[in-house]
Amino acid sequence: MRRKLVAGNWKMHGSLAENEALLAGVLAGMADVKAGVAVCVPYPYLAQVQSRLTGSAVAWGAQNLSQHAKGAFTGEVSASMLKDFGCAYVIVGHSERRALYGESDAVVADKFAAVQAAGLTPILCVGETLEEREGGTTEAVVARQLDAVIAQSGVASLAKAVLAYEPVWAIGTGKTASPEQAQAVHAFIRGKIRALDAGVAEGLVIQYGGSVKGSNAVELFSQADIDGGLIGGASLNAEDFLAICRAA
Ligand code: 13P
Image (cartoon, rainbow, N blue to C red; front, side, top):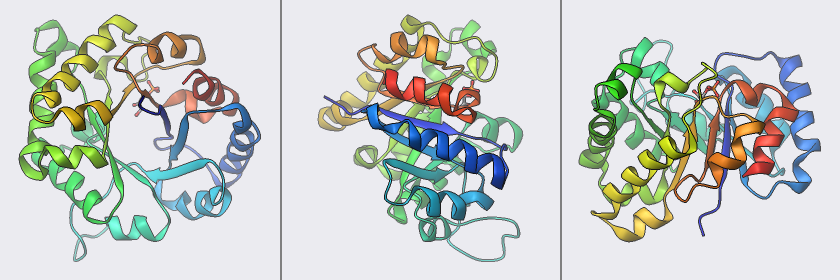
């Protein structure tokens, strides 16, 4: 049995005071959570979560990084810097990075490799737009996004990674993929990897992301190939986030 993992993606939200209240609320409700739990926070708050969460059952991580190790890259943050702040996870290839910041499959593959080179675990996001889904290219898009990483880092690299299937049309829209729609893509992903390495495929945690709430989490997480979630909006409220963690 794969252990489920629920990760909050705070995106560009929070303040020192808000985070303090949110973290306290989450920690207070962790006793009956069996799944792995993490929060991925904006860079400036990594020190805060490190000091608040060290020794707790909640891990933390970042939402992005530079693919470069160091150098003249004003405004960028490297994997080793994230490691300094105790990050376990780094999200790479989130659809907002791909769409708003022009991150190509090749850049995402470089970032994935940079996270692993520092000994951290990438959470690799893949997913199709509404146009791609309606055009019948969901599997082709997800396969292309995965292939870029596999071509660069090899299928064995997925043994130390987490995948997140996030259909772009379900992110922040309140329109969740149905459990059947999500399961179909998760099964496709696992099947594709199984064809390359069955052991890696069976152990791989594949999260679903896109308008997950306490009310839909149980049904989503009970699907055979859905191993938890990557949670945006609902991770900003301790009770909402805990309800999802308990569902996992
Ligand atoms: P929402 O849960 O707000 O739809 O966001 C999902 C997401 O993008 C997590 O990375």
